[in-house]
Amino acid sequence: MTDDTLDATTDATVDAPAGLRTAADLDLKPALEAVLMVVDEPATEEHLAKILERPRRQIADALRELADEYTVQGRGFELRYVAGGWRFYSRAEYAPAVEGFVLDGQQARLTQAALETLAVVAYRQPVSRSRVSAVRGVNCDGVMRTLLQRGLVEEAGTEPETGAILYVTTNYFLERMGLRGLDELPELAPFLPEAEAIEAETQEAVPSFDPDAPDPDDGPTSTMPDTTTTDI
Image 1: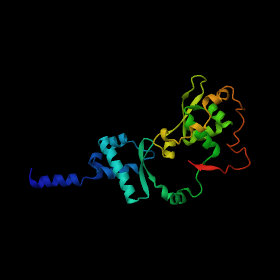
Image 2 (image 1 turned 45 degrees about the vertical axis):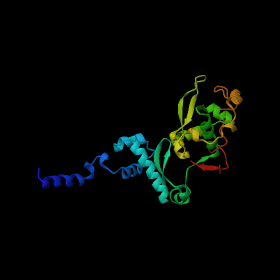
Image 3 (image 1 turned 180 degrees about the vertical axis):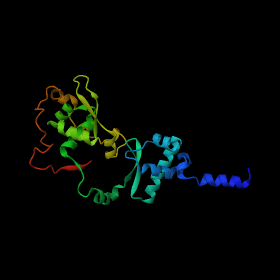
Image 4 (image 1 turned 180 degrees about the horizontal axis):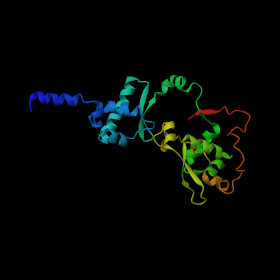
């Protein structure tokens, strides 16, 4: 093979169309940025390593370096490790700009009833609807349906004693709360009633209130709007 042939082969490799290059041929940090720009949930290091054909440790080191670089540069976004994976988030100090552009006063919010129900599930999970209702003192069926539809809670088997469906929070809940795991929840559990204290009111078949009664905090049954809202 002549020198001219070698030069031509080298040039063809360097200038190969993007469609003919493999993920392993790409610069790692720009490739990570490109992938993370299109994810709709936090991407795990294992998944990124598989996609980009690199060792997991190399991926983890590059992600942390990128996160540090964005912080040092004072960028309007940050790369955060949340709910077991990595994802881009707008930086908190620029929230007013983001809210003004994206939300424009039309953000879907959780009512106080939904927030209370979500808190009970988060701290008592896995938990049945009747136990949540016993803690709140009102029927929570409608609110639980809302949380299920929002993807903040999910079913997780049944209670052995009663057969009641149990509920837990989801990875989406962790993502929205900015938590790596449930162990990062604020220390609020001591302020909730102990299970033994409400045992008499938590039997699935014999609730201490009318299970068909509407939740006064849920739905259009009230003529007054619920003005206590929180973004989730």
